[in-house]
Image (cartoon, rainbow, N blue to C red; front, top):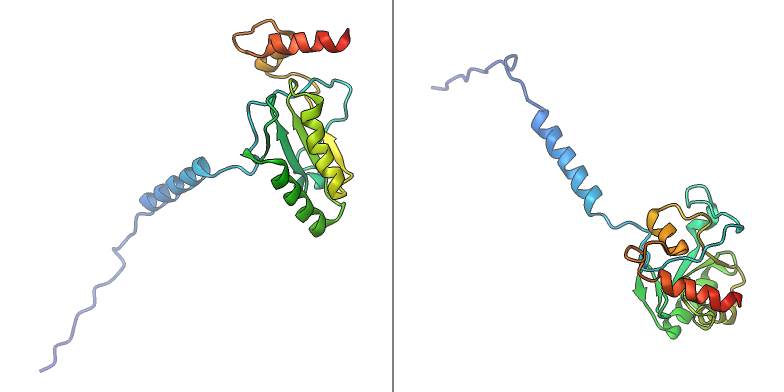
Length: 176
């Protein structure tokens, strides 16, 4: 004999969405906190002061910024891109590949430390020239906004800006 199953009505069932929404927000927070930002630069570099220079717009406003390559050169002459140290041969290979792919339609931005020597900066410029790249620009600070930047350039608080004395003595040597 076959028994008939009684179906229960689903009118009284309810699914609480609050825990589901909480989990989704937790995942969003996790990914936002752990994601590596695309702008990975050498934070030890203190850019030169250039109050009369042209201002560079952010990547959202400037279409050239999306294809630009940034080369960091710290005060000891360390060359890096995206905070990855490289020698001259590696940089030359990257620039040559980029030039073959895009031609001369992209910019190279050099972030040179204020204490880096001209020879250290020139090495990156020479590599760009050898690869046929003509759009080379230098990044600098137009207006020191943070307290650390102000301390560095005027040299008032050397505990927060440890290389400020070295920067001031370099500026004195250049201006004499």
